[in-house]
Length: 484
Image (cartoon, rainbow, N blue to C red; front, side):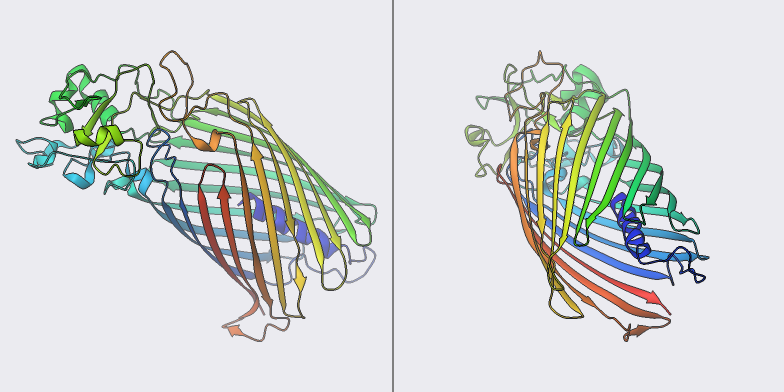
């Protein structure tokens, strides 16, 4: 959402380039109210589920819808409100409690710690022993979730249009996470508005409501005798050889004592029109985070600990293969990461106006943090104006990063480590994204809905592929109306 505010301010600055400071007529920053409807559909798949400790399905579908309303407040100010909802279904997240689809209780999180549905036979009163697999979704409550957010921003320009200040606030909430954000920024234009310098700061104060994997949640609830109580009552735990065992005891696990995550960012920007057809923009950020930076339901498996399972003993030998349909390994612990992180991204953007039909947009970013990750991003976009109304814009993005200090694949961490994760977002990988957009602009807003006229329609598609075999597709659609 912060990017949207930056885009609005950038558009303001371009508009102001044509404005004569000494003119008696002062054009409004925004002539009339604008209303934009956005929606997107995202789908992905892969084989490195972090909830499965680095293996398992990563299937996920996400649908997002939002409304953005920008309203001029007098000649110099604009108020923007952005309200949206994002609903997803995730095979990976459902496996916080992987046993739900086979008759086990729903006890994968604290809010589900209710034994009323457990009969005398244990595991939810079902005669059929529970099974699970990291390679397909369970029917747990964590399979689906909704993120609801509200963002508000205010921007004010000086009468000369050479100075802009803005402020924004944001709130979002989902099942186990709440975020509150505040920010402000200033922009100064000079050199006949050919040069712009900006400075902005933001803070996000977030709170977890931790949900732990079923087996660790039960251990926390009942202590060392947990295999005879709650979900585990009447459930057979298997060792690596497939024999019944009562030795599973994840003593390395303890619940997080801290549930807050705070993020702070300071951004410096510089933009310069170098030539009539060439613009360059530089940006540098300083970002710091503290608090609970781990994710509570990300499992960890230790290579130096015995392995224990629930499900079909004959499938244990084939556990790490997608052919495994009915056995799930019990976790040794959850992800542990440092409670601080410091990040520095630096970017440069070059836009070159080739002619009336073609504009080349390029972007490069270098990133480094104190978790050992460095990355580089290169992006190209070539908007092609077909006529007065239609524009197409093919794009390509390449990204590469090094591995975080604390990452290791499935079953390669050891219990003597202090920090550990099997999240492949923190592994070494490279990725490509290819796609494009088609835009329609109604120059005369001839299509009307009430007092609003159609301004533009935009349709985008991108295909994302990653070297760890994660693939994703995203389709987005937006339509903007302007008030009369």
